[in-house]
Structures are given as C-alpha cells and as structure tokens.
Length: 560
Image 1 (cartoon, one colour):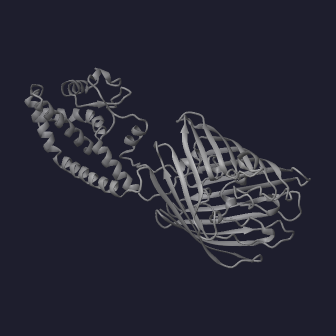
Image 2 (image 1 turned 90 degrees about the vertical axis):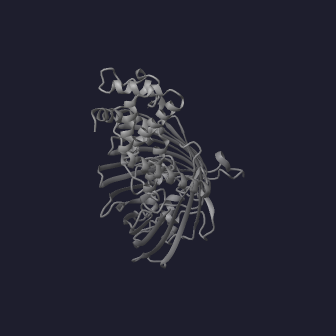
Image 3 (image 1 turned 180 degrees about the vertical axis):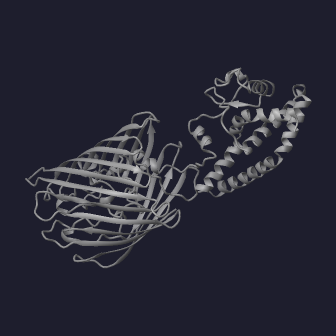
C-alpha cells in the first residue's frame, strides 16, 4: 500500500467514526440486530440502589448491546449529528491536533463530515469496520455529487486513486452492508404490514399453580389454578407509558382458621375467580422534569409509584418473585388502592451516589362510585408520603407514612378490594368491629446488597387504628426480613428466604402469627420459570395454641 494510501487510511477513521454515526442505514441495522438478540426477554435486572417503581421497570424495551450502546445513548439525549462547514466549529479539535489538516480538508473541500449539536467532534471514539465502510461510502457519494455538479476540479486524481483503493480494500464490508440494509428494508416492510400497532406492545404472563396445605392444619384439597395477565403498553412520546391490563383467573385462596388472609399468594390477586376477563389495571405514567407522574383509573396500589425497597422478592404480584403477598412487599403498601394519582420526585445528579426522592400519592377504593359516602374523597382512601434514600449502589432505605379512611366492614389491607384483605390476620384487617375507622401507619424499609450474589432486605410497620363511632381502637404490627441469592446455580435463578410476622392485632390474645417462606425460582428459558416453595405459618389467625399450617406450592410462569 502506498504512502498516500496509508496516510489517508490513518486519517479517515477519525472523521468516519462520527460520520458513520450519521448513517441511518448503519444505525438501523445495528439496532435491529441488537433488538433481535434481546427479543422475548421480560426479565428485569434488579439493583438495590436504583430500584424503581413499576413504570420504570415496564417501559417499552429498547435494544442495548455493547456495539450500539453509544448510538442509543446519543439518540436518547437528542445528541444527533449535524452538518458543519468549518473545522473551527469543533470545540474539541485544535490546530495542534495531528489530524487537524485532514479534518479541515474533509470539511471545507468535500463537506462530507458531521459533528454533534454541542459543537464536538469526539475524534477519540473507536469505530467498527462496518462504520468505516459506511462512512467511506458516504464520502464516495459526495465525490460523485461534486463530479455530477461540474465541480470535479475540487477532486484531484490523487484523491480519486486513494478513494478507489479504499473502496477495493473495503469491498467485502460494503457488500455486506448493502445486504444488511436490503434485509433490513424487507423485514421493516414485513413488520409494517403485520404489526399490531405502531405505539403498543403486548407483555403477557400466564401462571399455572399447584398448591395445598399440609401438616396439622390441613383444611384444603390439592388444587390446580391459573392466572393470566395481558398488559398492553402504549407509548406516545417514547418516555410515557399507558398500561391497559386484562386479567383472568380461577384461583381461590386456601382456607385457614379465623378466615385469615395469611395464606394469600400473589396469583390469588385477580378481579375474577371464574376465568372471566376484566380490566384489572389501567394507568398512565409520564415524566415531568426529573419527576415521574402516575395516574390510575383502576387497580392502583402504592407500590406502583413508590419504591418498596425489597428487591428480588418484589415482582408487582407477578409470577417471578416471592410466592406470598407478605414476602413481596411491606403490608403498608397494601393499605388502600384503586383510582388516584402519585408522583415520585427525584433529586441529585445522574452520576450522584446519593439520590434521594420523595413519593406522594392518593388512592381511593371507591373512586368510581357516585353514591353517598363514596367517590374519590368521601369513600375509602389512603394517602402516602415516603422518603427514599439511595446511598451508593449497595444500600437503600425508605421511611413511609400512610393515612387512610376505611368505611364499615372494610379491610385495612385491602389493596383496593374494599371488603377483602390481601395480607395479615382477620383481626388486624377488621379492627373497627364493623364501624368506619381511620388509620395512621408508619413504616421503615431497608435493603443492602453486599455483592451481586446476595441481597438482604427487611421492613417494620405499625398502624394506629381509631374507631370513628365506638371504642374498637387497636394497634397493628408487622415486620419481616428476607435474604435473596440471585443467579444461584444458573443466571436468572433465584433462591429466596423470608421470615417475619404478618400484620396482627396487638391488643387481642393468641399466639403471634409468624411466617417463614422459602422458594427457588429455576429459569428454564428466557420465557419460562418453575418455582417450588414452602410457606410455614405458626398459629394462623391468631388462634391461641393453634395448629401450624404448611403451604406447598409449585408455580410455573410463562412470560411473552
């Protein structure tokens, strides 16, 4: 290779790295390939210090591989390429730079180089051979344009010879690139012709469960139950999310003493038990500055917008976290639910290790009911305020306060189901003795992740309940701690152990209802997991000297 060719080969990658980024063909091809490599994945990487509410974890999937990470990052920051007419427009290119003259020539003689809107060139960024080939092709097109417009005198014979040799050198890459673009165009046309919607993505989950109680307190038969969720996620700006979720189920809760809700498992939470279909969640998330706003018309709970600080166990009542509603999140997030709004204010810089946030929300269980003593403000409601602190990448804490009003015969931990609780004993849920009552609840949660293979989390909750008519006041307590071992045995697997006391009424007799749970989620594939687990309940229902109950569950989850 001649000295001239070698000199141009050395200089050209500097400008072609940026120029190739401007090539829509290459960008589209790279992103499509990355999307294919991620297709079908519904798992969520969990990090204690950056735990986000449901909206952040369910945004429409975007391609992300090492090859195109820079492309996507720049696009998200609206940092796309723009044409320049003088090398002096680059703030990071100096006359003393070794490639200055080459850049000056390419910009001012040929006009086939682009920069970033912030006035930078980023000459030190590495580029692939495909990017180089695409940039070379762009310059060849520019040379042909100059020739066609009778400005061939700007192109010297030496330039043409150099470009010809470069074209021959990269002929294989150019041919491959053309093939990839042709394939991309064909696949894009097929997708456009058969796509369900340009703005909506379907995320589905089907859970098959075999469960039963064993031991001394065995009042149930072995059952085979199911729950299916179809969530249509729509985005209109790329940063907002409209969730329209349909659900169907035939799951009926296991019977335990005193009609306690301690045996409730996540798949029991569904709007129906006869496999009829209903909308169980309709919500809209959108950003407002550094904040995230949450609006919900039905099916809302506080953990939709407030971080629960319980990584790996929390799966928003899906089929890949803990088995029980108790181990999933602190019961304080189950106080109230339904329709309303929430917001999460985030403070601190993007690269700051200290990221505090404040979550505020209001949910009404009877928000759609226009009857007297109902509606958004006169019926059951729960207002939440929470301070969240992320201390580095390993430690997160949250302090929570919830004030609620509950009509007669309403459960304290109803999660919007009004007359039915979803966690805790019956005594703790119906403190008011059939009268309307109000509650003031206080909670604290923390999660510590000493390594990527170990997470420790826990919570403490106290509720002060005041009967608004009689004297049926009470204090409700709950606490728990969990240890999670992610990727145990295989990437995507999870071993979880959780122990504590489900919500119980402190002013009544009986033994304290302890809860011990262990489960192991085995990831069969990207879309299938199998989770065997055991839940041991001591004295369920706060029965004095009551028999223990052991629940055995085998859960199979399909995500699509």
